[in-house]
Length: 225
Image (tube, one colour):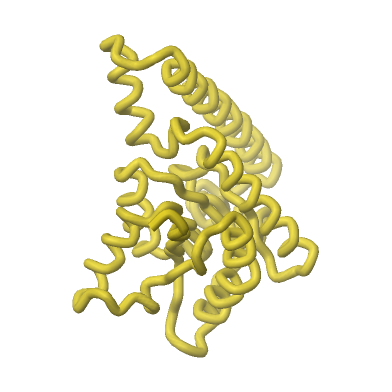
């Protein structure tokens, strides 16, 4: 149908009814994601516990991850199921947006993907909605953009074989530039961390515990109660 709305699917930690995870998931969906996507003409976003179209839950999730026009992945609390589902979306090479609570630390493998920080603070809620809407505008404006490293890898191979037009070749080279900058930043952070360790004279036998303590102190990593 010509007036059929685009679909948005949310992957993220849901938890049991009454749990901190469920409270967060409901807040994120109702007050941040839903107003952001419906303002762009999408239907009300869906989650896995709302899909009764399949007997097997995982079959329904895979179908949604594969078919939805947009997937928004909540990386809060680093749920392994979320990373599995997000990995499938990357392989499908379709639009996705990463969000995560602003008191969480990034996983390095995804640190090169733009992730929108979200919070329950009113001002931050407004900003998160704005950021998601801007990201959707960007997706709509450039349907040929690269969404994942699997897609980037494929484009690199096609560029080498001369099968890609100039704009996609430029996009592939731009990704290489981003990766170089990210690794340069990582090197700088490792050097800074090494200097901190030297100044604080951490005992070699407890170096791992010291690193964990230092990271948590600096980044205020929070887990659900």
